[in-house]
Image (tube, rainbow, N blue to C red; front, side, top):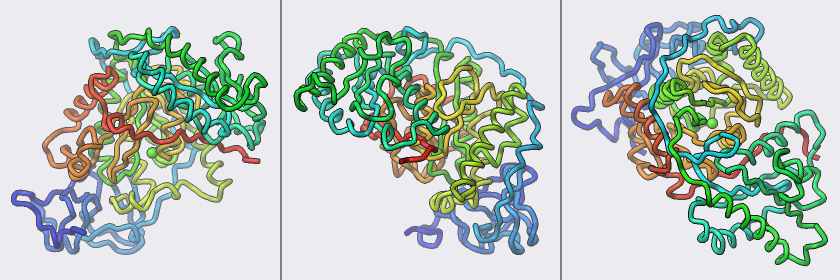
Length: 520
Ligand code: CA
């Protein structure tokens, strides 16, 4: 593997660090592959040992028990004396305790409304209910895992035999999952997976053309997945155990007949010019590193502010990556009620983790740590940079459909595929995903724009990463420029003018329901 010793820096690659706040006593090393002992920075700081890229160097002596500060916040307690110029690695610091939930400021520093941004549009698919999609997909819901294999066979035939006749339809997909039977369907928390499936079927990218494939004996009755405004629920369900089905071929025929009628309706959808205010954009990060909070996530935050200024809806999520920065968010709540809802979701998750014998310190992955993030506090401070600077207008419980416009906190686990599934249920039509370590993540249901935190990743994965925010660290771009570039890319992708790499390769993760209720 390359290191600072084996891969000397290119000519002109001057040693660089980034310090984020005047109060910080650490900075992160920018140069690819890190910097060796003896490196002297322009301000005179000298490295006493090798420091990997993205990892922290102490800017001053930090005594045992002293605070390690990044983002102007305490990200660790020194477990031993840390000398100026040395590597602040994981074993040097203890994770600070999370902010108490009973003493938070509520709506005390509500940001003033940002100046409106008019005139930005995209080409979207307007639905009868007023929502606007960015894709035109037939999505077939399922009420139980038992039908997945059958539906897969039917979808293969629909793609081959029917889809060519309906050129305005982008794709046909199954909303398959592991829920539906063998579960405590009446347990209090079962509301989350059931609500998620009900909400998923209504995602604006599916045009309101709901159909459900069920088995017949499962606990989650198929009809529960058909929206109340769809007329007789029976007309939208293919149930494999129904006596009219004589063998497998008959089941496939039933699915194809119902799909064909819906494809005919979806085929009439046309893109039309819509104001940017109709966008519902989800923000997520995965495979984060120390640059996430320096380059990519602040760019997402800037773009989030631009979208909010357009009147659009922006969702940020990932409870365990918000928990340690909650004291920075509740003051930004638009009302005390929104702050209370934020606190309610944090408390619910604290309790959920405690029941499982874990806490939020279980979040950072080995890759996060290798990327320079010592602990969840540091990860969280970088993660919430995605939320930009506007007031928090609303809070969604897991799987709830979005109601308000503006910046919304949608409570989800941080797990990439669970967060993706829940944001789709809440109604996102585009997702922006920042990554430092790299992931080929993608969603079939909505386009995903992937933003790299580092130029090295962006170059190595040039056919997977859509935008290189690493240019901020090297000084080639600013957060503002990158934010505008991302905003424009969101409009292009939402319009179908540009396809993100995950769509070009067809890289789609499975839907993964969040089921905190018991399995039986
Ligand atoms: Ca994530």
